[in-house]
Length: 338
Image (cartoon, rainbow, N blue to C red; front, side, top):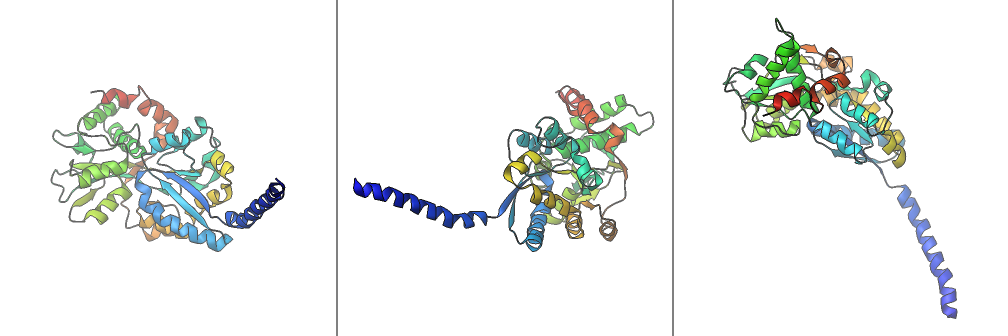
């Protein structure tokens, strides 16, 4: 009993000493960020993350590690709303980040004003990827609704890229002589009758077309088309640029509620701000996203085809486009009922 009385303070002191010795190690643990992104940015952020880790170490002397999550943009937004602890999101379209603000209450509604260019540090557009030699002679949007043409595109209900694809096709139909919402809807209906499978995300559709060999044409992000050509073989695919496409502006944002809880706000903000730096814009261009920096854009101008582009503003903004076309009971649901 006497021994126990003297041992208890000793054991308590030992635990305290151990905790004090361990605390510097805990404090020295590197900060970890989770970037929840959409499908075709895997290679881009693999390179960018390495550059940012080095930049942050040189600037602050601190270590940071970055984890990635990829999938269809709409599906990714839902997982964050449902609790996936993203410090930052880099999604395919503004509507998905708006959902984090309006539905998840995870960041302020004015998130787009916190970084330049409406928080979109790079842009892209939609092109066609066809098999080498373009055996079906696909040159523009009307070719996609011809009988016997198999079109690969993801599901607009889950994929941001698919929504850009859909809106680009709609805009083309609307701009034709006699074009109207009715003729555009009829055009989209014909197009989706030629779609044999709807993957949940853009990378899944690329796999379906390029590796599984399904379809005659893939509606693709420009960078995803270049990736397929460069990685899978220039002897296998050609890129066709349609006469009209859409300016895709993938946005980025700090998820304030998560970053504040995890104590990562400063590094999360710096992670997104660095995307606008010249070194990062070079990485962006090398992965076939269109850079915002004028000097870097000029350097890579020959890489990117000139094409007439509509914008989401032509559809009244994302809230209106989502409600009209992609919400439950919207145009897409009506034309895709089979």
